[in-house]
Image (cartoon, rainbow, N blue to C red; front, top):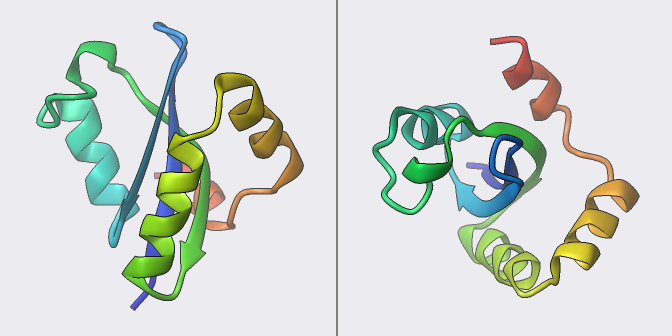
Length: 93
């Protein structure tokens, strides 16, 4: 099973959200439907960056590291490291 670490952006509110999941498509639907309390006020969300990890532990470790970055460092990270091909596939849905 693959796990995904992802970064969302709310362009309307200038906010980022970092998370991890087993199913990025379902998770995106939850964020944009208002089901997730922490992200509901900042809809709509776009998938900005995503990568795969082989274990949930690896995904959680990366999620924690990304959440501890300043906004400036997070944006530098996004520019430096390309997103996984899943981003292209989900953007087409």
